[in-house]
Length: 90
Image (cartoon, rainbow, N blue to C red; front, side, top):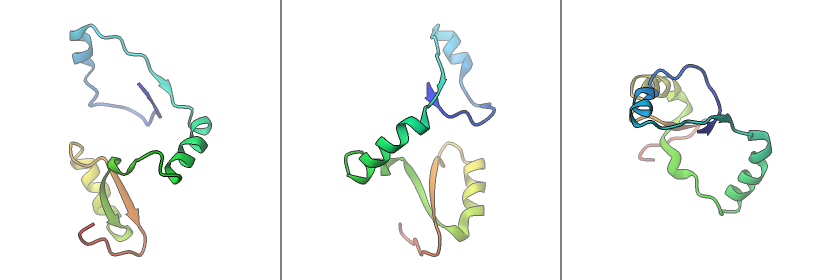
């Protein structure tokens, strides 16, 4: 389970892992080592990442976006905030 640790994960289904007898190994993602190559792949169109974006909001709606992320974690994952733009229908 590679990733970047961001604090407590109170919704992680640890019981489900135990019931199935699964092993879990974790580790920090080596962001500084991987980022330049991945960013170049995105810029060259070799790696598609836009499917990760769940919502797009103007910067002025950031407080609403953070509130929704906190309260609706099942449907709000990644949001992109754009300063000074109108995103109606985006």
